[in-house]
Image 1 (spheres, one colour):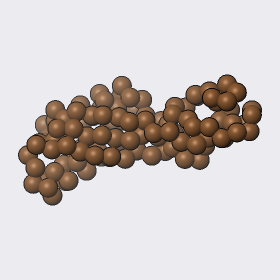
Image 2 (spheres, rainbow, N blue to C red; image 1 turned 180 degrees about the vertical axis):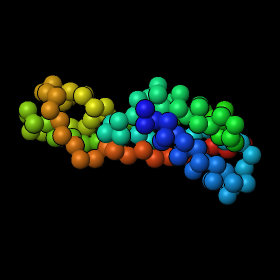
Image 3 (cartoon, rainbow, N blue to C red; image 1 turned 90 degrees about the vertical axis):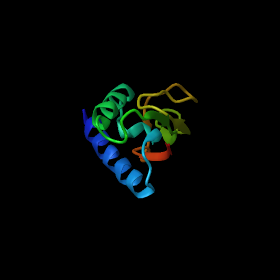
Image 4 (cartoon, rainbow, N blue to C red; image 1 turned 30 degrees about the horizontal axis):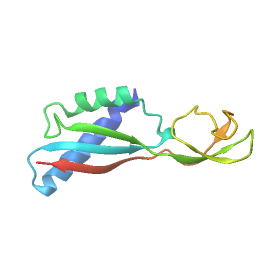
Length: 113
Protein backbone atom coordinates (compact mmCIF):
# COMPACT_ATOMS: atom_id res chain seq x y z
CA UNK A 1 0.00 0.00 0.00
CA UNK A 2 2.07 2.90 -1.29
CA UNK A 3 -0.74 5.30 -0.37
CA UNK A 4 0.53 5.38 3.23
CA UNK A 5 4.04 6.52 2.28
CA UNK A 6 2.52 9.09 -0.10
CA UNK A 7 0.28 10.41 2.68
CA UNK A 8 3.15 10.55 5.17
CA UNK A 9 5.06 12.73 2.70
CA UNK A 10 1.94 14.77 2.00
CA UNK A 11 1.33 15.41 5.70
CA UNK A 12 4.95 16.52 6.18
CA UNK A 13 4.64 18.88 3.23
CA UNK A 14 1.36 20.28 4.55
CA UNK A 15 2.79 20.74 8.06
CA UNK A 16 5.72 22.72 6.63
CA UNK A 17 3.36 24.89 4.60
CA UNK A 18 1.10 25.48 7.61
CA UNK A 19 4.11 26.56 9.66
CA UNK A 20 5.25 28.97 6.91
CA UNK A 21 1.76 30.46 6.72
CA UNK A 22 1.42 30.64 10.51
CA UNK A 23 -1.93 28.87 10.42
CA UNK A 24 -3.43 26.85 13.24
CA UNK A 25 -5.38 24.15 11.46
CA UNK A 26 -5.99 22.77 8.01
CA UNK A 27 -9.63 22.44 7.00
CA UNK A 28 -9.38 21.03 3.49
CA UNK A 29 -6.82 19.74 1.01
CA UNK A 30 -7.57 19.10 -2.66
CA UNK A 31 -5.40 16.62 -4.54
CA UNK A 32 -5.36 16.24 -8.30
CA UNK A 33 -4.57 12.68 -9.31
CA UNK A 34 -3.84 11.25 -12.73
CA UNK A 35 -5.04 7.76 -13.70
CA UNK A 36 -1.51 6.36 -13.92
CA UNK A 37 -0.61 7.44 -10.37
CA UNK A 38 -2.06 4.06 -9.34
CA UNK A 39 -3.91 5.50 -6.36
CA UNK A 40 -6.81 3.59 -4.84
CA UNK A 41 -9.14 6.26 -3.48
CA UNK A 42 -10.34 4.35 -0.40
CA UNK A 43 -6.79 3.41 0.57
CA UNK A 44 -5.65 7.01 0.06
CA UNK A 45 -8.38 8.36 2.34
CA UNK A 46 -7.58 5.79 5.04
CA UNK A 47 -3.84 6.46 4.78
CA UNK A 48 -4.42 10.22 5.00
CA UNK A 49 -6.41 9.75 8.20
CA UNK A 50 -3.69 7.52 9.71
CA UNK A 51 -0.76 9.73 8.63
CA UNK A 52 -2.38 12.96 9.84
CA UNK A 53 -3.26 11.68 13.32
CA UNK A 54 -1.71 13.91 16.00
CA UNK A 55 -0.68 16.64 13.52
CA UNK A 56 -2.13 20.03 12.54
CA UNK A 57 -3.48 18.23 9.47
CA UNK A 58 -5.65 15.87 11.54
CA UNK A 59 -9.35 16.33 10.83
CA UNK A 60 -8.83 18.02 7.46
CA UNK A 61 -11.11 16.93 4.64
CA UNK A 62 -9.36 15.24 1.73
CA UNK A 63 -10.83 15.88 -1.71
CA UNK A 64 -9.53 13.89 -4.66
CA UNK A 65 -10.03 15.22 -8.19
CA UNK A 66 -9.31 12.71 -10.94
CA UNK A 67 -7.74 14.48 -13.89
CA UNK A 68 -8.11 13.26 -17.46
CA UNK A 69 -5.15 12.48 -19.68
CA UNK A 70 -4.87 12.02 -23.41
CA UNK A 71 -4.49 8.43 -24.43
CA UNK A 72 -4.07 6.71 -27.77
CA UNK A 73 -6.34 3.79 -28.63
CA UNK A 74 -4.53 0.98 -30.42
CA UNK A 75 -7.81 -0.42 -31.74
CA UNK A 76 -9.25 2.63 -33.53
CA UNK A 77 -6.03 4.69 -33.59
CA UNK A 78 -7.69 7.79 -32.15
CA UNK A 79 -6.85 9.96 -29.16
CA UNK A 80 -9.24 9.86 -26.23
CA UNK A 81 -9.46 11.25 -22.70
CA UNK A 82 -8.88 8.68 -19.96
CA UNK A 83 -9.79 9.13 -16.27
CA UNK A 84 -9.02 5.67 -14.88
CA UNK A 85 -6.79 2.75 -15.81
CA UNK A 86 -8.73 0.12 -17.72
CA UNK A 87 -11.30 2.60 -18.97
CA UNK A 88 -12.65 1.79 -22.44
CA UNK A 89 -12.06 4.00 -25.45
CA UNK A 90 -15.10 6.29 -25.84
CA UNK A 91 -14.81 6.02 -29.64
CA UNK A 92 -14.72 2.25 -30.16
CA UNK A 93 -14.92 0.56 -26.75
CA UNK A 94 -11.38 -0.81 -27.05
CA UNK A 95 -9.27 -1.25 -23.94
CA UNK A 96 -5.78 -0.94 -25.41
CA UNK A 97 -5.20 2.72 -24.59
CA UNK A 98 -1.64 4.01 -24.23
CA UNK A 99 -0.62 7.17 -22.43
CA UNK A 100 2.67 8.67 -21.35
CA UNK A 101 1.08 11.19 -19.01
CA UNK A 102 -1.15 10.86 -15.97
CA UNK A 103 1.27 9.93 -13.18
CA UNK A 104 0.54 13.28 -11.52
CA UNK A 105 -0.29 13.63 -7.86
CA UNK A 106 -0.32 17.25 -6.75
CA UNK A 107 -1.84 19.49 -4.13
CA UNK A 108 -4.23 21.73 -6.04
CA UNK A 109 -5.34 23.82 -3.05
CA UNK A 110 -5.62 23.98 0.72
CA UNK A 111 -8.09 25.73 3.00
CA UNK A 112 -6.97 26.87 6.44
CA UNK A 113 -8.62 28.35 9.51
